[in-house]
Image (cartoon, one colour):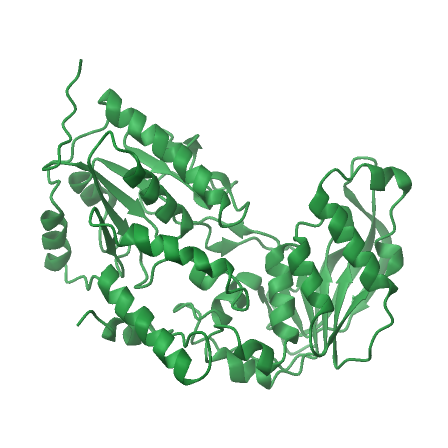
Length: 454
């Protein structure tokens, strides 16, 4: 029987690259097993942990963010260290990671977005929902962006929850947004917004939309916004209705029918939930700005695919936000599937690599909700532990946390610890309380780094 090299004095050393839900769940899974002593370092290029929970989840959906209570417990475990403000590939290379860790788990999510591939996409006022979400959630990379909301009409292309989030934020009142943890720089911009009409566009029908019922219902409860649905775009044949097996989609159709049957209350703003339409061209004003969106009306073929009818309509919009899917970004020296936007892997083991693993969206593509990543991470960690038990993992020659600290210090890397993050978290909550808000986000990296453990 092989004697494993891992002991309390020399535990299994694992580097987790990315501190979003997948990274935290992978770490949690490593801690919960009791067969092997472990030591985990969780890296993030930002000073702040939690990834999309902080920078992607809608600021007015605070209950979803309650998962961070569990995340805090994981990162606060004495076997875990959070190394924030450390960028993989720049501050620490893959070769250096391999020198200091027995195994590596890539959990960097999908930080880019898919494009529409239509004329006019380069016009000013055409951008991804990803960029817009990062701006109003206070992501350091987007916080300084000059976001002009002088458009009266906005098209949001896509019918997932992110599309609904973006539309909802655009039409909420300042008072409604004040109760969220939206970034402080976004509030006055949204308050001055000229937006009156938002079109949420799906190329297929209501039975194929990817949003969830709770998010859809919220459009019927907004203070100054009417939901608008065209009955003909949500009409289903008896056969089509009978074919809907998903309860969420059934409830979505019910809510949409309710909206379609309402008499508009004459509120100041409107969200138009449109189906069976595809954008074909973003129109310009001759000066490089968005001045309209040309869409083609569709029908569904026998396989449920959208087919253009040759009938067109132009929507009077000055802003187009694409929300047609996230996409992973390649990491330095790590294999990458350009077509799928993921790290090529076999159920979580990186193809062609020993001791390298992946979990979350960068493993399987952008699908599921926050909780979906737990099983994904657990499955990956199970393979990692299987390899550790079989003795196939390489043994890192410099396995002490002190060696990592010395390496980063020699490079002048300003590491932000979990205790530092807790100090920043406390400061944000205290400032929020002062202003009557759940949290006052600090969004500039330099300002974040000033908050440290006393």
